Amino acid sequence: KIRTIELEGKTVKLQIWDTAGQERFRTITSSYYRGAHGIIVVYDVTDAETFSNVRQWLQEIDRYACEGVNKLLVGNKSDLEGKKAVEYKAAKEFADQLNIPFLETSAKNATNVEQAFLTMAKQIKDRMGSQTMSNQAGKSTVKVGAGQTIGQQGSGGCC
Image 1 (tube, rainbow, N blue to C red):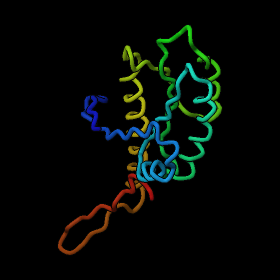
Image 2 (image 1 turned 90 degrees about the vertical axis):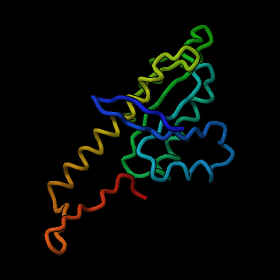
Image 3 (image 1 turned 135 degrees about the vertical axis):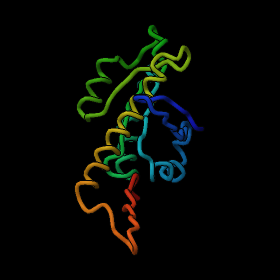
Image 4 (image 1 turned 180 degrees about the vertical axis):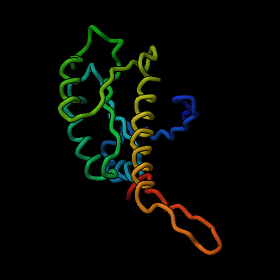
């Protein structure tokens, strides 16, 4: 799915791959990680087991995704206050320990859903911008022939 958002006056297109429910097919899921610029790990705030699985998902990301890939932890179903099994504070502390941004969302009433995508897009933009700046600081262009300039392919991903 393609999602278009506005970020700092620019239109950004995000290609979204939802791998929910594919836990049994790790080889399929791992292929989604390769080349991804950002990964949002979502758990259900009403199901403590899904939160317990977050560490394993993050290990999968570290194993298969590009080094430095942006991550965002999201607790979904925040609208179900009375059924919460994972408290905001515990999830936030966990995310802070790993230096990963954290949000609670509700897909049902759209709370923070747009913010999650904006947060991820901004993280990616900031990282890609700093990579571009560091590429420009070094030898990032090569002169070829009669004044043709070819920029080095920035490895937006890795793999």
